[in-house]
Amino acid sequence: MRRHGIFKRDWQNIKLDGKWGYIDKTGKIVIKPQFEEVWLFQEGLANIKLDGKWGYVDKTGEIAIKPQFEEAWWFQEGLARILLGDKWGYIDKTGEIAIKPQFDDAQWFQEGLAGIRLGEKWGYINKTGEMVINPQFDGALWFQEGLAMIRLGRKCGYIDKIGNIVIEPQFDDARSFYEGLAKIQLDDKYGYVDKNGKIAAKPQFDWAWNFQEGLAVIKLGGKFGYIDKTGKIAIKPQFEEAGSFN
Image (cartoon, rainbow, N blue to C red; front, side, top):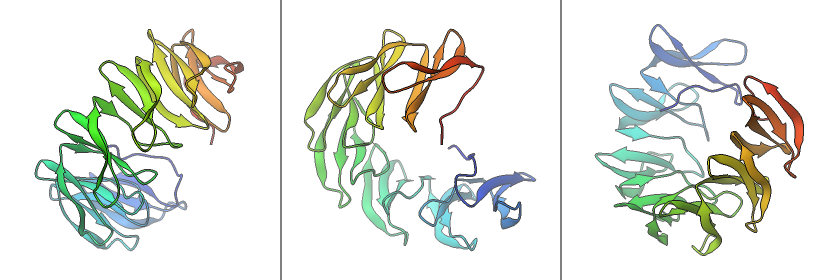
C-alpha cells in the first residue's frame, strides 16, 4: 500500500525510527510516530496499521476504528473498502459494515458506484450494495466524468452508468477521463480519446498521463514535455522527469 504523498492536505505522513506518524506544515508532530504503516487523511480519517491489522485514526490521534482488517483503504463518498478474511466489503465512518465482505476484489466508490469482482468478472454496485451492472467485464476502472473504462477480452472501451457500451472496446489499454479526455494505448503508443470515441490526439507518444489544467505530460524521444487538448506540443519534450500541473 502506498504511504507517501506531497502536501496536498494539511498533514503529511512521516517515518521516524521505523514508525509512521503525522506532521503539519510547520513541521510539528501532530500524531506521534507509532504505526507500522499509514495513509493520508481523507474525509477526516486516516487508515493505519497496528499489530498487523488495519484500522483508522482521527485527527486527535485517537483510534476511531480499531485495527481489525487485513487491508483497509481511504474513505471516499463516506465508505471505505476493507478486506476481512479473504473477501472485500465496505464500512462506514463508525466502523460498521455497510456492505458485507463478499467480493473477490473491490474498488473505492466514485460518482456513487464502485467496481467489484466476483470470480473473474467485474461489475458495479451502488452504496446499498445493490448490483447495478452485473459482473461481465474482464477488467474495469472507477467512474470518472460519467464513464468507466472496461476491458472485454484484450481490448478496452467505456460504459455509462447503466452498463451501456458508449465507446467500443478497441484499445490495448485505456485510463479514466480527465477534463473530457482519456489516455489510450494502441500498438505501444499513447494518445487520447474524447467521450464520443473520437481520437483527440493520435497515439504517438512513448508515455502519457492525464490532463490537468489543460495540459498533459507526455514522453517523446526519451524526454518529457506537455501537450494541449488538440494534441499539439505546448512545452517541448526536454525534461528528465515531469509531473502534472496543479
